[in-house]
Length: 332
Length: 277
Ligand SMILES: Cc1cc2nc3c(=O)[nH]c(=O)nc-3n(C[C@H](O)[C@H](O)[C@H](O)COP(=O)(O)OP(=O)(O)OC[C@H]3O[C@@H](n4cnc5c(N)ncnc54)[C@H](O)[C@@H]3O)c2cc1C
Ligand SMILES: Nc1ncnc2c1ncn2[C@@H]1O[C@H](COP(=O)(O)O)[C@@H](O)[C@H]1O
Image (cartoon, each protein chain N blue to C red):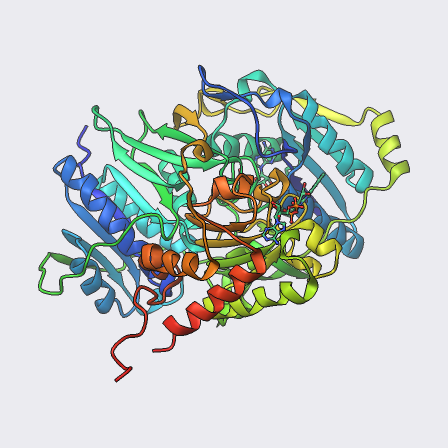
């Protein structure tokens, strides 16, 4: 086989979290590439890419492949897939990592299909085993189980990773790396899906499903009036408010905030959970949030066991204390 | 207008027992239900059918018990239901699943105008089947759709994608995946359910019947291999902060301010200092 040992990271730069996940993937990709003596290569497609190219070199890319053209200004599933797949066939990277953003998920799934290879979604860990295979750890069943997966007989090994999973490397703008500016290939098929309108949403208007921070209240919040304090906390964190079923039934908040099997499926980066017991019908909807802070009077509540940090406290008092502390820290 | 909806049956609860030796989930031990996003996709299909007429085919790959979700679809108004049931189809990853669904659609509904799927499933949560099916069927497609409008053969859809509200247009035939945001599913009529269970109207097909190549379906056609499965809750070590609330909250920021700040994109690590003089 003539496959290289290179690790590719797709350069998703559309807004804050998309850009961060690319940098986070470069950090982990670098470890993987070094472990098998390959190159870490960032592949970026779009328009006006210089600043992203510089960013990727500063964050550890050994090489950047950049396809910069005015016709590529808007993200387009069919076109970007063709470009990525053609490049991969030509250069044969061992691994392709893509951020698990909305577009990244689409692009990775399409590319894996065209390349006829495996793709593991939402990996929470990536490492190489002693045979040099990429071992991908991914959650299933609402984050209740983790599976280790390898792609032993197909090429390339592909994975998506959610923002916040890995830590980015400190930047070094003195760093140098070769950058290849590639021409738009001839004979590209026109995109069949036309983008008519695109508006950037203010973070607060974003749907619960796509919110990076979710503040969730359960029966333990105590009353409708106290539940309202969560709205203030969510506002300070730039997040959204969610609720469990008893809260919705008691009309402390609107029905659309229900999270779980009967409600919405969320995938926040950070989940704050107040007075929630952690029934599976509820936790089935919270994905495998990378960071969970739970507040409960009962340290043995399942929600506390699922959390990274558990505050054993009154839910409402903890909410008020968090609001005060955040106001201090966000003042500057 | 001929709409195909792909429905998956998923376990009712999220915590399934699994066999630690084989790493396989014991799916047989849990009751099944229609995957939530699939329910919304079915609702979108029913509304389109009500508005524009035509027929609706529901398709599901799964074990014999998965017939239940197809009966539910029939009770709600699907015209035809097809269960792809064959031990050789089991253990499929998204590569194999999308191949199987594509062959099935071509076999039972070659004249289809629109394929609707859920955006993700609660058991595998990959969200990959939609994009991969669009690739295999070579269709214009949009994912995570919340709103749609059909005028003649032109489809206009709206979706939230990475913090952008996007409006997209394409011509039929096309493929969409639907989120759980809109298209709140209607109640299943009781009489309809009884009728749907009484009449044996679910067509069962195997790999040969849909013309799938056996080396591209099921476990054999899958690229991923599971090494092991384990429970993260047993592994996640919760740090408990007890004592006065104010102190616990301060400790939270002191120890995790960096991590939290990084995840929410704000600097939280340091309390404002140096301005008291
Ligand atoms: C078919 C089905 C579907 C369902 N779907 C959903 C769903 O989609 N979403 C959903 O949320 N639920 C759903 N449920 C309900 C679910 O089973 C639970 O009943 C629900 O999630 C419990 O909500 P809770 O944690 O707020 O309340 P509880 O279980 O009552 O827990 C309250 C928690 O707050 C703590 N507490 C009490 N007082 C305080 C205080 N002062 N300070 C701090 N902590 C305190 C308690 O220790 C306890 O842990 C479903 C149930 C069924 C049967
Ligand atoms: N076994 C299956 N049978 C029918 N449809 C399926 C099956 N698996 C996945 N799908 C469809 O693909 C969507 C996304 O699934 P997934 O990519 O697995 O999260 C589901 O909502 C279904 O519409």
